[in-house]
Length: 299
Image (cartoon, rainbow, N blue to C red):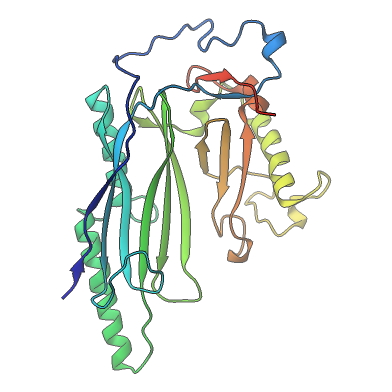
């Protein structure tokens, strides 16, 4: 008989001190209060405006193990596991509900993001049923049957007055040479409750400058000099020219871009990621969306 792992709630004490009003007032002439005295502040790095975390959440843990297994933290077992935040409170109920719906859709979607399952429980049931049927078939043919694993972990990376950034990490192994893993990022606007697209972070005609800065950061990361043609490398950009990955995260002090395995070539290339500090792209950022403030780096 299968054992249901405890559906646990690990409380994270994230006290909400701010965001007590339903509207955010901005000054369109100087929306973040940093456009004065630019001659003195130009050289300072920028970060998302700091304030008390506005979202209060708890981490939910749901899993099931094979009959013989006891500890969900073990690696060499058959298991399916979900760990994700559930938003408990926010100043606007509609925003809280919108974020929880986004998270639920992640839990119930397939690898391309299409909704497939009715509930986490039905997804667990399907996985374990398929595993047992596969194990039975392997035994009938006197073939070895390995463990199956599926894990989805959703982490809160940034919890600021204006934005909530999430990382969705997935790992799946149902046989083969190696497990498959991939990571996706989402940034949610806490004024609208919607996921932000990359283009929404910038002013018009930002593309060329962002690509130039990003390609330079990519080349530094993979140790390519500026004169080396990407066509001559083992990085497989569809057009032969540099392209940003669809995966990005809004961090406290910059944007994070992330290529999953297979995005740029064979699995052996692994993950490639790089960061762009806000200071480097300040001239093209829409500062009514990314609310920034200068800060002094520690020496």
